[in-house]
View 1 (cartoon, rainbow, N blue to C red):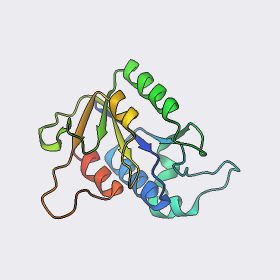
View 2 (view 1 turned 180 degrees about the vertical axis):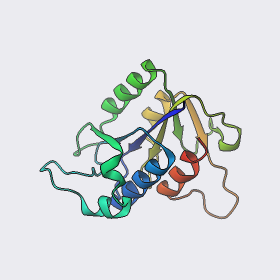
View 3 (view 1 turned 120 degrees about the vertical axis):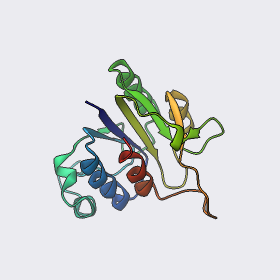
View 4 (view 1 turned 135 degrees about the horizontal axis):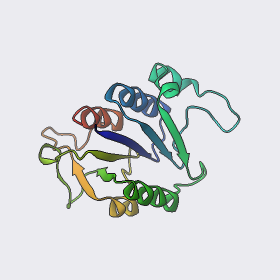
Length: 161
């Protein structure tokens, strides 16, 4: 049986995070890792983040999640440590990013255990994290825009496998 996890790298929008949780639930993701300043479903005071809860339609309460690093900075080293742990558990780590080294999403063969990394709305996945990934995959764009919204990208990728 396939296992997939999601790593959200420094996405700032609670709406995007909530949307990714909702998609993760529907696509059978076992766990979501939230890196650095990415908003979490429950804040450090134990309060539910209403924007995430509302956008996720409660999926942020049913999908396992873990915050990695600190909300004050990008937490790159902690993210790389997480990636190494996932690799030790047999996951193939895939950065979803536009990069000269990226292969097409259409050519990507989904492994049995996969960890997908989705990056910040403007900056994308951090360079150091891309370099720590096993593969880099991009969704080819045909129109005038260079990229999709991060939550839309997660939907496209997670429902493929």
